[in-house]
Image 1 (cartoon, rainbow, N blue to C red):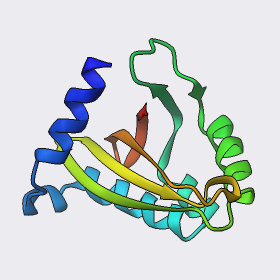
Image 2: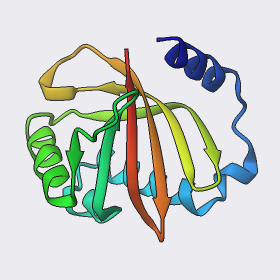
Image 3: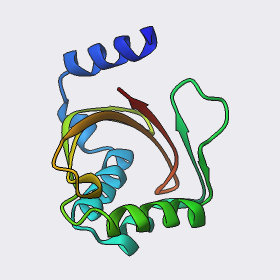
Amino acid sequence: MQVKSILITLLMGIAFTSNAQDSPADSIVQLSLDAYNNHDFELFMSYFAEDIEMYNLNECEPYMKGKEAVGKLYKDYFDASPELHSTIVNRMVFGNKVIDYEHITGARGNSEAFELVFMYEVENGKIIRTTAIRQ
């Protein structure tokens, strides 16, 4: 809980710098987000590595492993969420890592918005790992 509070405070206090906007990791994550918001499943999935791992903060084991499993999760999510949209509240880029504080609407037909922090790790032009911090 303390780590979560510190990270969210840090994200809210950090200014988005112009050099961060130009990083390869930032570009891949932004292209992925654009595909997500356009509900372009195939393009969205093209940004993930075959051996993608998805974690929740403070968990040692991934909750999702492999592009096929991630694809099934997101295909179902997109199908159930025709109004799905994520807005970046704040973004921080640190080398090959991108940390987004996101405001999400339209999930599974729900009109209620929610926020989360997603950390992406990018290698060789693909997202290889994500870590979610949920409220």
